[in-house]
Image (cartoon, rainbow, N blue to C red; front, side, top):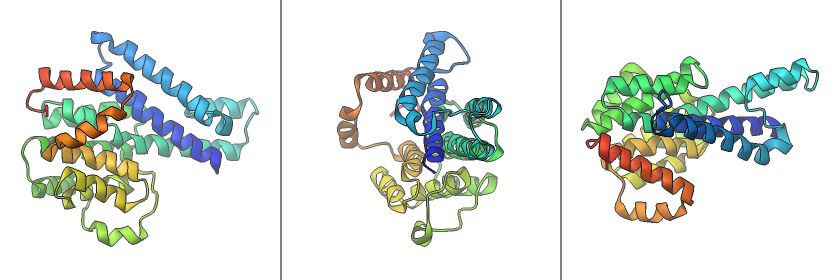
Length: 264
């Protein structure tokens, strides 16, 4: 099981950070060294995962690599199925988590949904992964543009998922789920039941399961809806190393310059 879990984590990190970089920099054009940044992100993530999980699973993080190992006789059919399934679930879980940058960068709801699908399709085009990414992008866009919680809930239920539960109702039996359909609705509900940004994060973590995924989905919706208190910014930013802080500063500068309505 450890090697399958390692492939899940490795693919999840690859999708979240490497493809997330492509989403933020806009790798469809060569402007502002977007190609270079995206290439570096993929390379650095692969190296980091090779050191982290290579001794456990070999760090395939790609069904094509696993297929090559199967055809060359270096892994069994059972392991191949386990690897591919783990990679598939890791990619789906990472899809909704990384989509917030696209939703904040978009200038309209239509653009947010198109960007969400385009970014998700980079790594996989499973309908559930795309659905989760678009539902998250929709919620962020509606929150950014002054819609109420009732509006956000109604649109999510109309277009994507039923939200006919409370967090207290599902908490006792909620487990670790890797798929969008078992994390995105729950994350959105965490936001809907909260009364502050901090409360949103605390509610997501309290639910358990894949709590970092839940918080990474719910948090950007809460930020778009309420903003993040300054004292939390001041506490969080020192944890970023110089590279990550540089990326953060570039992102803030981009939002202030090109999307003043979204900057905050």
